[in-house]
Length: 294
Image (cartoon, rainbow, N blue to C red; front, side, top):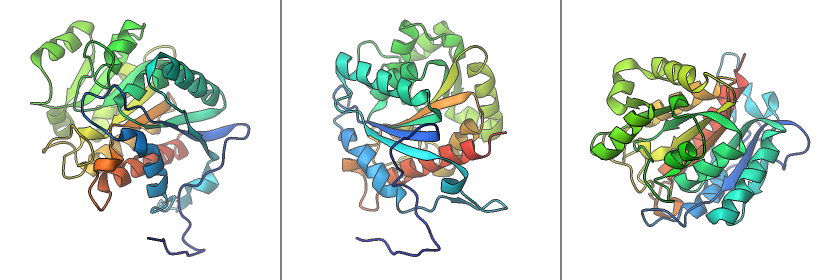
């Protein structure tokens, strides 16, 4: 279905390839081969780009601000075949190249396996995850990126996991997170403390040291009604507005230099595309946060 054309209502997306320094750059990292659940997540970067066209790049303010006028935004395309050792090396190299010319690199996944090479390529010294799950499993999969980052030297005392949910994890992995010194802010904590207080705490912990902070946006932290296209989303997760508010709050901090949006399977979404549209809105929330940095 074609979208209406209105010269007074510009659409987001269709950003050019990077040319010199930019404020923000998108890059597709369509990981999917090691997923613990059957997934078509490799189709998602293209779906997010298409969904961006449904939205305006305008913040209401006041004053209203067109993000495409306030920021230099680019799209670097996809990293082909990002799974496996060679694929991860290609992702690290591409993200490192982009991070050298952009204030914010936004990786469009793909499953959560993308977090491992993207965070490393961005030179992250701290990590904030918005995720219902710990991702501390053994082996190499979309359930292991946090453990792999720690094993490769990321300080677990600078990792904050927001949205960890009851009935979505095991006691063994909860103990592993505790033993490592990871800061865990459960789903119940988010609702008790509020978005602002939670993200302020997360940024203080993850940003305490050298190296930038990477933000992992696993959309399955949301309620299944908002994110039915996430294989592991469950009823009772975050509302869409809570995820969007957390993402914008994180991106408004200059210590956050990279982010990924993962675990959306565009091929399993509802006919109205609500999960992919939420992922596209998370892209715009990242840009909104960048635009208001002081």
